[in-house]
Image 1 (cartoon, helix red, strand yellow):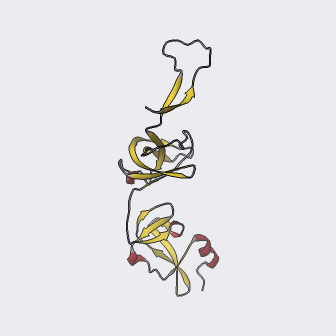
Image 2 (cartoon, rainbow, N blue to C red):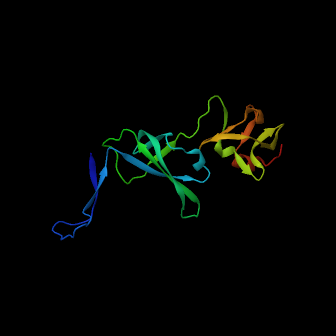
Image 3 (tube, rainbow, N blue to C red):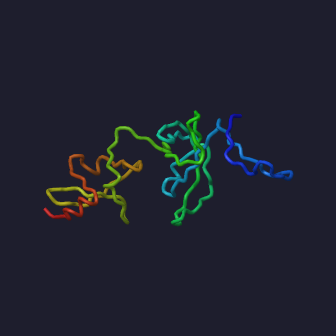
Length: 178
């Protein structure tokens, strides 16, 4: 296989014993990116789903190949699930050990109404947003569907597209007054 040495464990002239690790060879034909998935999203990620991996400004196609069944904790105590995404056509521009941006295509919907994620709030009774109705800021319950870091799908009957939808800063500014 094709590969690169990613770790050298001995120096030139050193004496070694049988079984001593000399170096680590990384396969460049099968390149995996390890990602951590939050407890809110892990149930949406499945083996075989397509993904996009961006390294140093170059985007590669990939596929989820493995999902751990053991959660780990990050430094803030949040549970994370580890998953591996294999880059389909790795090339010489890939560097090992660097951060990558990975987008897993977990779900897809066409012809739906979406709101910017920043205007969708989650309360004890479900999701809501603030809209201007008759010149007054009003809390509007919404039903959400598929979401990403940037957008949230909402059921069309919940919100009329012609209403002004406010983010948190706009709501604070107007604070429910005419």
